[in-house]
Every structure is written in structure tokens, then in C-alpha cells.
Length: 153
Image 1 (cartoon, rainbow, N blue to C red):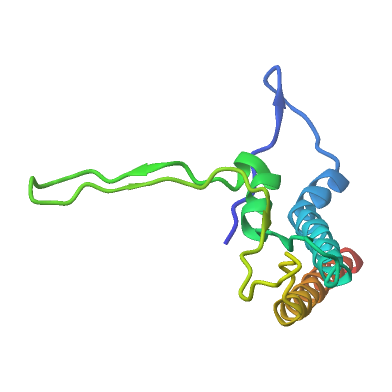
Image 2: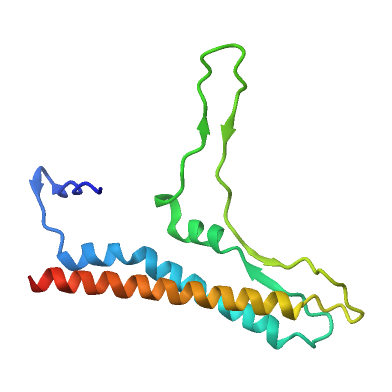
């Protein structure tokens, strides 16, 4: 369960944050996710459109890494180092990944003309991204409807 955020203060006095700003921040994550899904859809569509273009290299976006980068430090987990309580424990560290880039796909079947687009892979990725985009839209729709219902009560 989420706690209520602390009220903003200026010079020791409470200030008011407009309700619309709070609602906007609630939808920031979904807006970013939908935008990245749209960008990925465009990259996948470009791959499909260039399936017969000689020397075209298939590209893709690492969605999870791009989302982490787009959301910035808010979603980044700090690097972690475990505290050892015994000399026999194995030291361990966890590091978060750096920023993502648009990547080139590794071809499963090399072609004579140098094109790396595999239509089967592209179709599956396109359909998967479409399904996830629709699921994200449905989630946003449900959140808006629940907010409207709360406002009407």
C-alpha cells in the first residue's frame, strides 16, 4: 500500500500542489511506456518494410533498458554490496545497467545480399509489441475510469 506523500513546504509553510499535477505524475510512467512502445513499433515496421533491401541491418530497441533510461534516476536501483558477517561468505555486488541504445539484431540465417531481416522474427516481435501496447492502453483506460468514478462519488 502506498503512503501519502509529504506535503511540499516553502519557507516552513505548507504549499499546495494542484491536483492535476498529482494526476499527471501518476500517468507519467504509462505515457513514457506507450511512447517507447510506439518507437519500437516504428523500428519493427521499418525492418519489415526493408526485408528485401540489400545490406539492410535489422534493428530493435531494448524496451526495458530504454524505459529505465527514460524514467531516469527515479526507477534506478542503487548499486548494492552485501555486508559480510563471516569470513566464509562470498562477497557479492549488484550493478544496474547503463543507458540503452538502438541495437542491431544478430541474424539467425545469413543472406547473400547482406540483409539481416528475418521475417518470422520480425512478425513475432511486431505482434508481441502490438499486444503489449494494447495492454498498456487498457491499463491506462482502467486507471482513468477509476479516477472518474472516484471524482463522481
